[in-house]
Length: 106
Image 1 (spheres, rainbow, N blue to C red):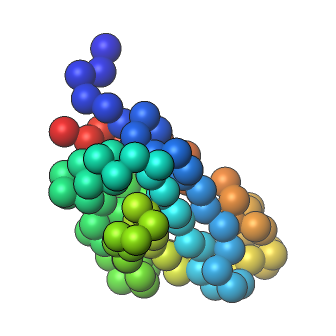
Image 2: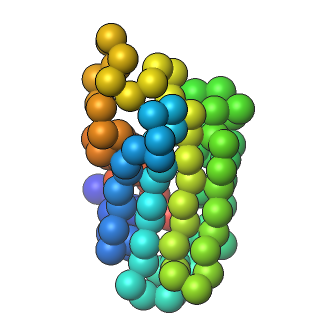
């Protein structure tokens, strides 16, 4: 049994999508300002934490933005292979957000 809420519990939207052929962008949007602040202030999301979560080198996290006016956190990672290239399995980048669901927020 969990003791802490997860990102899935706190965010109203968690999604990923293409950001050009070489990048995937992720959005976490919060309806409640308090939930946004809890996640923002907890330190569970940072470029280093994203890299660890996705098991990628930190250098592949190209952008990380906390956008206060929208209660949102956005980050972008560079793909290993361009979208649609042989061996690439998610052409639209829309299936990459699931690891974020179970991140616990103290």
